[in-house]
Length: 266
Ligand code: SAM
Image 1 (cartoon, rainbow, N blue to C red):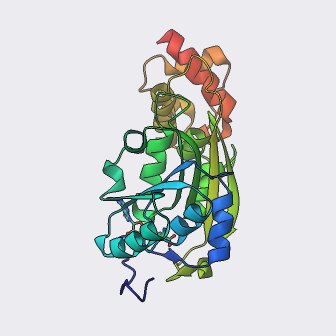
Image 2 (tube, helix red, strand yellow; image 1 turned 60 degrees about the vertical axis):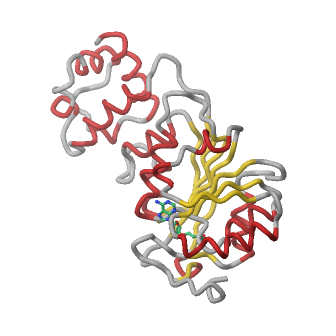
């Protein structure tokens, strides 16, 4: 496909293509049975993962910014009639819930330059469960580690809390850099996220406000990093968490409890 359509990888667009069909078929099994299910894919590129999703029987809506890829994707659309809908444009500006109008999975080998921002957007909605039923996303290994990190580790921070406070997040598959064309400098991993029940009495914005302030000054004690938020230290006291602790030592249930009490005292 790449040779046929004269596609050379663009660094600016984060293009590292996956061409190994076996690997792509394995990635397409991660969301679960896809026959007849909707899948939203960001950045299909020459269409390797798209083809695997279509082979698994999915109805795919794919957003690609690089118009050079569109002829290859149109060939794919003709090979799987009625299964592939293409949107040319920037995924940062597309609302898949509006485009698809039914529950959908998200599966993507994300472009590194917008991958984290997209995932943060999908995880940040106040409405829960979200319109998507699962996320199957390829990230640089370092970002994947931050998503699944546990309290007390260097990788633990806002992204881990965002991904885990109302979802199950795991690394489904490490992927060696040599699997990509061209190979990126770093290793990758596919993560799988499934929404869980949102704890009652906590809003996303409250939790996010507290963790942003605390992890914004990660080396500082909570006494220092939360003092600019009125009543945050009182909430800390009520929950019985020492203000001398640093943010990475609080596990996710502790963050949730703090946000819950903060909602009631502020
Ligand atoms: N899915 C293909 C694969 O696995 O071989 C390509 C993955 S490549 C890592 C990322 C793709 O995202 C590229 O095709 C790139 O053109 C596209 N892309 C980059 N920025 C984008 C954006 N803002 N919106 C939509 N697509 C984008």
